[in-house]
Image 1 (cartoon, rainbow, N blue to C red):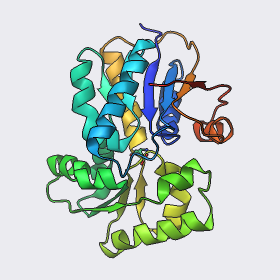
Image 2 (cartoon, protein in one colour):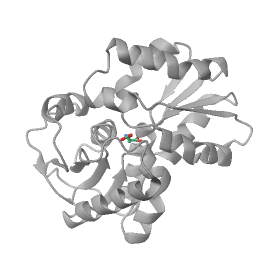
Image 3 (tube, rainbow, N blue to C red):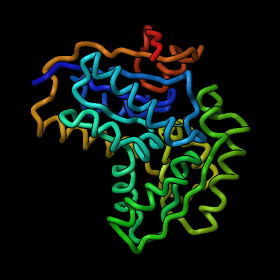
Image 4 (tube, rainbow, N blue to C red):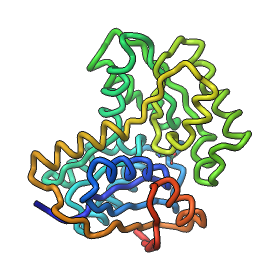
Length: 263
Ligand code: DGL
């Protein structure tokens, strides 16, 4: 048993969609959540930058006692997973891509899969590669959605702009007959209503559900489950005035305080 926190990070508030799934399946666990508001959005940045952010944040979380790291950020998972695993070979490091691919293949029944994600994730072809490992016959169509993350960070998840952006991004996937759409950025589950309105027939996949269940299995296997919750903690590298209010709504539990950290 180990009551230390699970380190969870993202560029901003998107990773709260993952933290909330983790706390649903592992209610005795505590999370140490890091929002990299100083650098959000990650989606259009060079991979070298995303890797150095992932490394610095993981080092911070491990210095705060994290017993596992969840990269609650698809683009970091796509390009920085190996870097973080090499730095912490004895700590489980869990990303989003394998989980999203597994859930998508299970839902797709051999039909085309669409991926909505940041430009960086789409360009990395990480989802294409993971889906191909599981089901090489499934065609994968990716669409980069640069307008989505700023809308979520601003709390405009149900705004006309969000509806319009969702229509634009989903259209090529509907045309390609994608019956399954992966919400391949942790901010996008908060836009699920907009995406559903734009592609009403598609099944939407939130990789966080599969990732949380994989995390649970991993902690069980390594005998790292917590016996008792010690409390969730929230850290940020910069300011987002919405964090306490909107973040609490996204997480589904009250965020009382955030500690600012310069890395
Ligand atoms: N939420 C992150 C992801 O899952 C990063 C989004 C961004 O900052 O562009 O990819």
